Image (cartoon, rainbow, N blue to C red):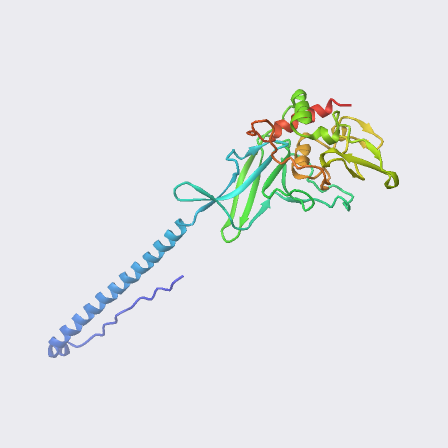
Length: 317
């Protein structure tokens, strides 16, 4: 803050004779005093003008700084339901209303970011947030599979009505911005449509089987029991494509029979390469992040698709 110093002109008193004897000089002094006061006022005005100009300059500079905004990359509204993966980005809003994607370093600070665990050395406990009254959505950092920077994975709508998720991003040298993502209720699935997606549209059945029971074992000779993967030309792995159907096995319930899973978590798993315990999925599991779900290539995987696939898996025993 600038300190403002006032210039004060102090006029000393004089005798009448003195004034009479020096009437001419007195007039000069008075004029000089008047001029000095005028100069002082001018200086003050000049200072005000400088202050105003500085304020205007600051205001102009502030108005020229584009505002930050969080949007979806495809221009869709900020809303989704369990199974959706919203691809978000931060943009600068220009004076003419146009937008430019922020190229600076972006850090998503809310909601939380879940770091996928090493599939070969995972911890004993799950690390995903637990469902409750509030919706559950998070970002994922996966160093063991495809990492989709800025994707918000919605896994549970919560029990509170009309709830949403606040997303916040910090942009280097530009500040912070937040937005509210509306969360829709979980969708009912269409098993018939889910069957077509699983068998014909997405290559799920190629590895997990036409009934989603998982890949069968093969004799690996000295290597023991192995599992083939048709996607990679029959390469052999020490672990199978697991069963996803509604069945109980010696190893426990398959995904659709396991109450720890849901359609929302299935959508997260196939798009973030991470299971419901926060463990990264291993190769050769493909990543279906916003995969195309029709021949025209105009529709990408969404919450309804995932709900449909999950509904069909429930019918398979």
